[in-house]
Image 1 (spheres, one colour):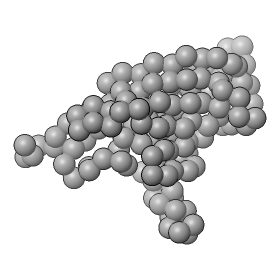
Image 2 (cartoon, rainbow, N blue to C red; image 1 turned 120 degrees about the vertical axis):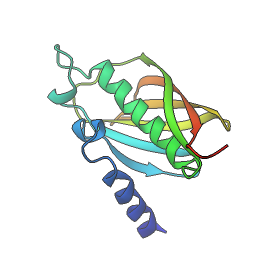
Image 3 (cartoon, rainbow, N blue to C red; image 1 turned 45 degrees about the vertical axis):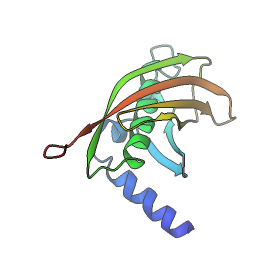
Image 4 (cartoon, rainbow, N blue to C red; image 1 turned 180 degrees about the horizontal axis):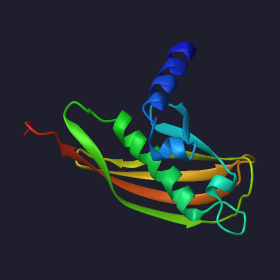
Length: 143
């Protein structure tokens, strides 16, 4: 099971080449039946001018992990997923190490999904609380 999970993580992260996720060095680090976790290094690439993690980078991390969760827990043969709204409340600053975003579903409907995304630092301090709404749209040729 460990090897198959490692292989799945490698496959998931390979899809992120040449995307914003690669630019920000966001990687999917763990998943389970009802959650997905991604991590992002905190460094000058994601700083705001005063040397702390930029809220926009945090929101990008949250939307990336939430959208990915909606994707992998959906039937992508029938639908495609798009984010329709994100909110982020930033609670604490961080200037180094990593931040981790864990996405879990609050609602998993046929058409809309709502995800709770908690962003924490290396010491498990809560950095931001985010919500992402996604929509499942039928692929062309499907009813």
